[in-house]
Length: 70
Image (cartoon, rainbow, N blue to C red; front, top):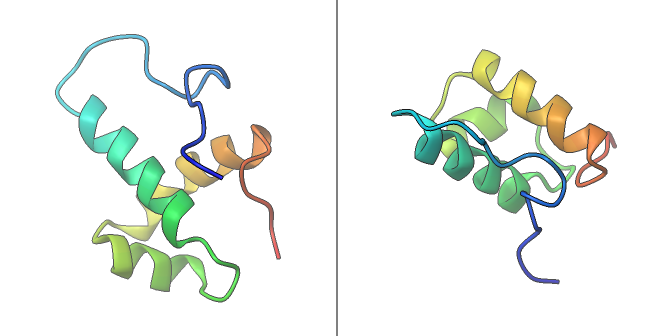
């Protein structure tokens, strides 16, 4: 329950940049909408990003144990 602690899992970006907020927002959207019922394309459309951009984020979330493949 609640919001996962991204920094504790090494998922929160440590260096500044323009896209930091966007990356964290996308990561949180993946966590919110990845319900095991939709594929990568549907998830990307729901979030409003290119599906290829989600691959790195999904892999990081899997390695951190926050999501798993159905």
